[in-house]
Image (cartoon, rainbow, N blue to C red; front, side, top):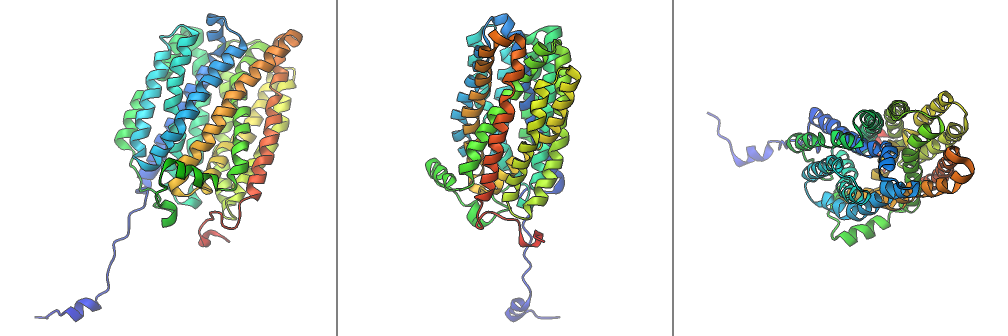
Length: 444
């Protein structure tokens, strides 16, 4: 019988069990992406269905375009921006899955409750509750994805999530118009709101909370300290000095376009809410096609460094400008549809590319805060000023151009996209050699 000694034990190799992936197995990781895409879709349905219902709500309430700009932009944006930062700090320090599930339940219940409201002030008050809850969606989602996938592979899952947003805008446009024409805007809001409660339960029961910073350097995953310390650290990220104002301008362009293109189609081209919803929904399909392509390109370009994600954003923004101009000025509905579809095929990937760029330049312990800072600034200034600015300009042009005024009001969008393209390009130039890069093995 053999006798084992301490020397024998010392000579034995030590076998260390590998640490499980930060985001779980492949099936769990992609299930998480699927559900987060559904959450993004739900948020998109909520926002776009409300924008599509702008015309029937305005008719019932007898208010101006400026007042509707306040309802769809200002009231939502102020609360969204105020709540987003403390919510994001919670996301950086607590269980993100639970936080997201609670937020989904609140905004779904509130959206459904809007269907029972019949006054302008009542709509504004309940809509702000929706805004506060929805402010948790983007920071928690991007933080979860970033801790589920390594840095060089985040572009594709982020693009899948943004496909959900695009699908939500498309479905929101169709459902809003269809349900409004048949049952009225009250029923439409109930129908798009209350089903979200089931998704909140599914997220709570089946999404795994990944290890924070499991795919990052230990120094990047360290705690950031107080909320104000986190903000100071975020302020030290150089590209954000260009990207932050660029994101504000981008949101102003996107929010103004999303809110005022449905009335443009109905007023200028004289179509019903149902036909408008179908056309606008098909237009937004372009973004669903563009996002995964953009995610793939973003991951490929990121092998050369994180600045290339920002260069991609700038290029997509600049390429979208001529199609936007044409979509506003062409005389026929058919030509406008084609121009709008091409615009979405070109610009639809901006969201996934930009979100992948934002998390690429932020360490793990600041991701939710960085996303929330950008999103809050963009929402407070961009989404607040965008629809309101478009409403004010359109009210000023109406006496001269009547319903055709929206043709010229919507030319604000390509002008704003030109500005944000320049700012994102400068943001890419500002990423130094110390910027976050993919692993050396991936750099050819």
